[in-house]
Image 1 (cartoon, helix red, strand yellow):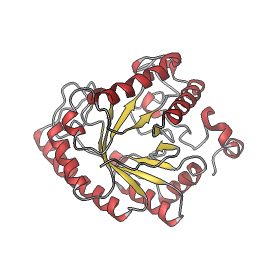
Image 2 (tube, helix red, strand yellow; image 1 turned 180 degrees about the vertical axis):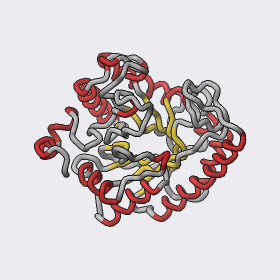
Image 3 (cartoon, helix red, strand yellow; image 1 turned 90 degrees about the horizontal axis):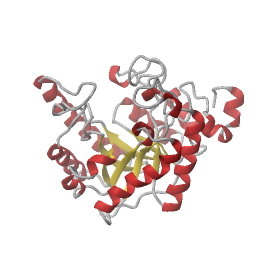
Image 4 (cartoon, rainbow, N blue to C red; image 1 turned 45 degrees about the vertical axis):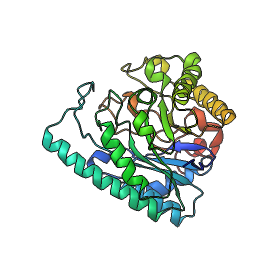
Length: 314
């Protein structure tokens, strides 16, 4: 089907604070999620969630209880079902672990279906997996199995179905999967690919347009694009990671996608300290438009003068 996708300001939301970690099932409380959503409602209408854990359940609960004006792209997180020897930081597991992951993925897909059906008034689309086929992923799922998951979801929900992935796999390995999807969801990160701010928007446009050219007529959504604000130099030059540059890229990205009529989810709402290594300057931790203690970074200071003045509280 041709999806009827909503319009509006869109952002990726993962509410994990200091000491919280989805891998240890340490989730934000309902009160913490409520604080976040009341911050975000001022400027954003569309949220992207990454899994069907207690975190997602609580987000949907708060949206419904508080009658918040959000629509949600709900995701299912899929663990590794196959070893990926190309992953620089791991990606290989024993067969018992892979088999356990397959069972858990089936259970996660079941949760996705249930939550989507229980929240049809809030969930506008569902995403089956995130960055599970790119060459460097540590949670690789082979394409035939991705197709199996997608077909199962499409048969059970009314919402449009997608898969969220870096722009590169869309170029070659995902053609058979595309045929099963209602729209393509693309990730693009120029700063991860050593692009300076002056090259960033052109590079983003080229990434998206290269995918669009391969699948004419297939709707495309940008489900991740953003700019890091701190780095230890691993994966990107430290001087490229700065709040000033994030603000420039964000504005350029918003201007282009609005003019082009592209739905674009900014990555991401809040910094997430659980990610990556223990180094506090690990780049994975620093993509938020707000810090982990909910202070606005330069990119959104003008939108939230009350938070700048008061420090934290919404």
